[in-house]
Image 1: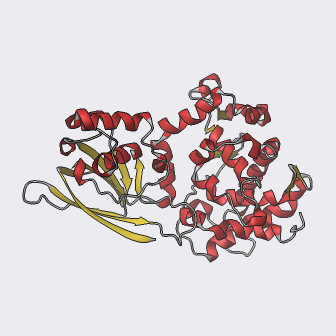
Image 2: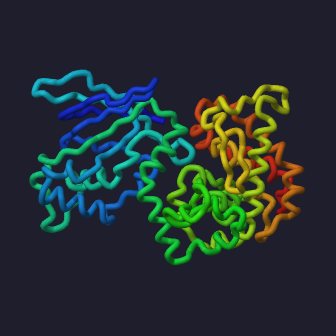
Image 3: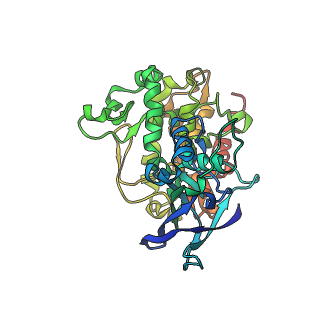
Length: 395
């Protein structure tokens, strides 16, 4: 990681929320003052100037820039530190930000600091201010445009992707919903056991048809299928499905049924394996194969709250995605030509507990304080997969 320090002025700056180390600041910033160097966090990086929201924003910046702040919901970003101590001469605040950004040496897809909501807003502003404009395209009065900038600091890295997903839900739901109009998800819906169907929605507000609220949508199924997908993440080539943890939106947008056709029929088994992994976590909670304590509820990304799985099983622990996904992904070693090399129950009996123990041993040995940092590390995934693959390299 490297540290990025930025400074700019704001018309107004106030700390609107404080809870422990978490703070949220609301800033009113003139468009020309918005820094060019802000990185894009998860979901926001998918912003496109060809999207309808961006086109509408550019039209406003061209014709009625003074109304931009009224028509636009603003930008939210995550930072490491923020300072806006007092007004400068002229009445504006000097704002200083510190962000951590990835370098080429960092493994995985950085989930951290930068724009996590309002990516289209930021991209439209940067284009209007600094982009290459088409013939007769201009924004002569853009200095009259202001934008609301919300800055959150003191956020656990494990929470950043959840915040981004929730903030972008209005965007991500139509993506899978529009695909569903073309019945793209039909093979998944067919493979999903009837008794699990009420726990997964394939279109917005569908859970109103069920008794109770569905806690999962089809993107969650796509993620699990990706974990076992050797077509996309071939263990023989040391490719690992880190994207399933970090980039559900990308998986949905890039969906290609042909690349999933061998793993979709295994969906019931995959969900069964996930349930066994969670149950094994419940078994080792407070104990360990080496005699060391594993108090899972105190680990980053986990808690003592109940968690309902797609199968309907209710765990007495909430287990962060990173603490079951690499275990589940390791079982793709046992898939050959779309079939398990042994009954999945036998595979679990032989390898399940060993893989869960290895995951926690790896977590402790690497001294990870952040679940997301643990998730970004390729070694987290390769350690478990290679533990199995070395025994079955001939597959």
